[in-house]
Amino acid sequence: MPRLAAFPKAFMQELCKDGSMKVFEWIELASKLDIEGLEWYAGFLEMADEQNWGKFRKEVASKGKQIPMLCCSPDFTHPDIDFRAKEVEKQKTWIKMCNTLGGQFCRVLSGQRRPELSPEQGISYAVECIEQCLPFAKENNVTLIIENHYKDDFWEFPEFAQKMDVFCELVSRIHHPNFGVNYDPSNTFLAGEDPLELLYRVSDRVVTMHASDRYLIEGTIEDLRKEEGGSVGYAKRLRHGEIGKGLNDYDAIFAELKRVGFDGWISIEDGIEGMEQLERSVAFLKKKIAKYWPINN
Image 1 (cartoon, rainbow, N blue to C red):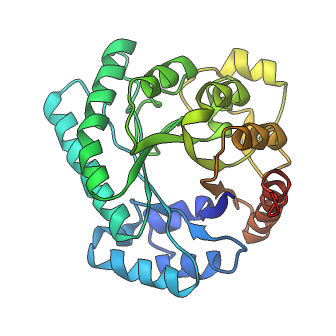
Image 2: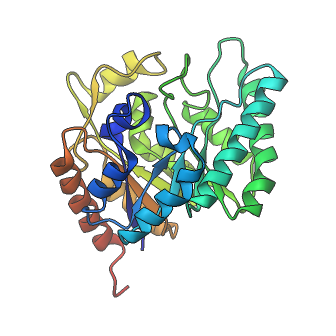
Image 3: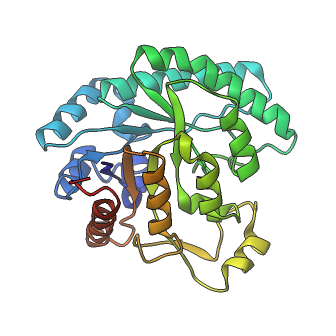
């Protein structure tokens, strides 16, 4: 049966930029939720001190939770080979961080969609770099998970593999027991594409999931696909919201995941409007999980 974790989507500025929230405060807040885990972020300001890694793991464990996933953003599509080599070393540091935290899954990305890159160049660079990281991941009992991502906050360009065809091609070139997909249905809308179509293409490779939802502020999904597909900058028609009340069809998503035998972690990206909203999203997802993965099954 899948287990739930939560990501501090509403507190990234406070945890990663101005330091107005401490990691222990997030642990205290999240530990009150009816979940099993806390997804971690490599960019928390306090993670710069390696001595904190073990402390945070112990604090989370003291609350009866665990840290299953580490979110980080390598940039493997830079044309300079030395730059890419440094990104590989960064990823290895994050793999070590993930292992120290007790995590099993560490995110990878392709990199930025630089205008001068052809699709084949970008895919080749990303595959080469990810494959260089996989032996180290295996040594640390960590699985690298590539997300159908939109854009890191600090990047100039969107994700190279944002579009479905590029993402699926990249995934198809890497076959390793320590590599899989972190599926995020909402990010597919930002590419102007159908999240279910993507899921059906990669469902047998999905090992973790980000649960989120988006609302259309105006217009229709057809308008979004025409006007926002592949655009630079977040889709202005879309807004993060409470899970189960947006565009995603969680019945269809969970039916497909159950069909392929998925039993991994589902991390919630929600709570922009407060912890009460996050609690409602947890309740919605627990109800859906119970429906598709009944205990007596």
